[in-house]
Length: 228
Image (tube, rainbow, N blue to C red; front, side):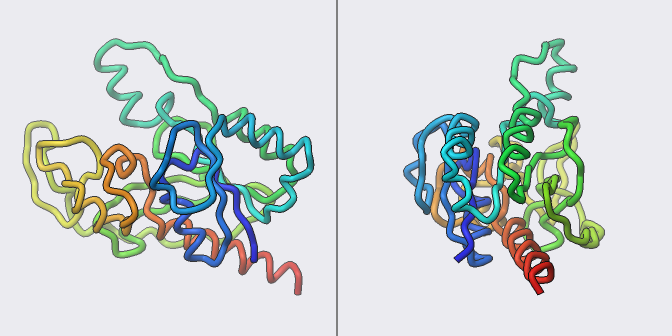
């Protein structure tokens, strides 16, 4: 079975999608994640990746996935910092993550939300592509492999809740924050297809597994075409 290393794994949204795409999944993050549904290493993701590369153990993996913290450059943080006059207090880990991933020579995926993070947007996925109850746009840089970009369908309406002082109903929920029409924990679970955790913070950070199910399937297809 193909194996994926899920770096900065949080509670396993990305990992579960690769599981659905028939990958064996190993996760790594700095926090204690008792809800993570697969084999888990608690520690610094970049240190762990560097150690696996140095020892050669990295080659037990077919694909590497990394979702480095995005607070430095995500659209929500950048906008809030600007409006409040705050400086950037967060580290941007995208560049060092890419450097270590390139060092492995293996195919990889780097995931980031919309914002200023300096990644190639080889793929942009959205919940509407998969009939989900969230939009949650995410960008993905593909290293050492490629696939065609899927069509991004038009959104069917608004995200439910208050925005700029106006409340709107809509077919999507906001899986972050609380109050003001934001999604409840059960609504977030249903909207994103995540059942194994009911921790709000973990759901807020997660990507829908449908995204990496699609990516993992596309990777396996592309890899098989190369082997034929």
